[in-house]
Amino acid sequence: MLRAFSIQPSTFNIHMLYLLLIFFPITMAASAFVLRKNSGLAISIALGTVITCMLIAAQIPLDNPTRFVGVTLTLNALNRMFMLLFLALGGFAFVAAWHLPHGENFVPTTLLLLSEISGVLLLQNPFITTLLLAVTGLSAVLAIVDLPAGTSSLVGTRAIAAALKYLVLMVLAAMLMYIAFVLTDIFRPGELPGRISLAHFILALLAVSFALRLALIPFHAWLIDLMEHAELLAVALVITLLNTSSLLVLLMAFQSFPTLLIENELSLTVMRIGAAISALLGAGLALGARSLRRGLAYLILYNCGMVFYGLSSVSTLGLTGAVFGALNQTLAVLLLLVSLSLIERPDGRTPGVQRRDLLRRWPVAGMGLLAGGLSLIGMPPLGGAMSHLLIYQAAAEKGWPELLALLAATLLAGLGLARAAHEHLLGPSEDEVVPEPLMLGETELDRPAPRRLAPEPRSAAALTLILLLICLTIGLYPGPLLTTIDGAIRELAFIRAL
Image (cartoon, rainbow, N blue to C red; front, side, top):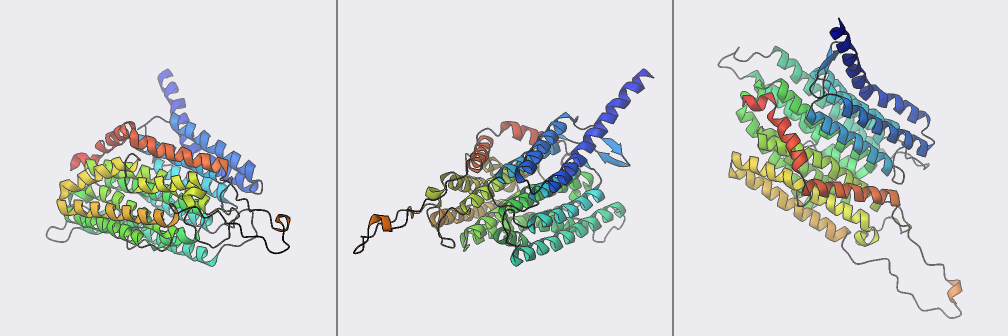
């Protein structure tokens, strides 16, 4: 009796921790929505919420599944690492919102997204997970079409069109994913000998569904439109939180249905080739991009192709490189978009004039932009180098043509980043104006005062430096993260089965 009594409170406490991770951010999102006119107070509440959730996530015992209302909830080492990362990125986004453009309801929408992503990582039911992924797409649309905070301007029609395109594609992706999971329930290996296996069709549905969510070419139009027309902080949430969590859901699908991989060697080859082509085309389009936003969007597409190739390799090296690359992508994209948002911030210059001295004008933001791009293309000593190296090794095991395709994609991505840096960052200073001689009868007092350009906001610049240092630290000391990821990958059932 005493032993049973001592176990019950522990189980109750675990239930409460799970529920707090999911529902506490929703409650605080409602509070932030009520206080949204007081931006400073809403941001402070949100920062306290993410810190509290990080402490809660750290208290949950690993690999200790529990059932609540008929649904299994559990947290493994990999999901805990990404949950802490997502919460930390949410905190970084709230700090950036002090000075960078964002929507009026950015804080409550972000808390709502963090709650939904926590549910995605905790719940082990594929059908509920599919529904939650669809709901996250709707929440992201709310962030994209949100009215700009602190201004009287309305949301642009192009931003609304981009949001609608994203919503339609995410609903389509959820439908394909749901159909695939329904078919896995009725699929029985070996029931129809001599016919095309249903496993091929199921894997094709999953591949297209996640290609839509990750914006792999040719399903990439929504990401380009968001980068060009939406607020960059909202775009950062979509790419860092939603895309990365989709990769973890794909891993969960492989773990739940390893038969799909055992019977689909040819289909996996097609997926790898498609991912390599997507990376190659994304890098090539970055080389010819006509604007800085568009060029950076294509670099992100290149990195998504590389990560998806690692997942499609279904090997320990490839999956470790893909998960490490997804982690690096979340940090690099946030660094990239925060830096770009700083660069685009009005500072007293003539609007609409293309500048070529952005590194001189915004030294911290310019360095962050370069570092984020270099991390995406896998240049040492930044965090992307290790993930790219592992993916290259996985490609070498599959054959030299696939390895050459990935290396060519990286070369093109590097040239695209170099072109963007040459055109927008590394030019001579354009702030120095040669004084004109005084007109007849004119004195110095008759001339307007010299223009003073606004400096970089200190909090946003400090945030950029912190993100840059994190990317550099991960690149220089990847061992602890790599050990955690490799151990989690080797424990997956389908890896042992293959």
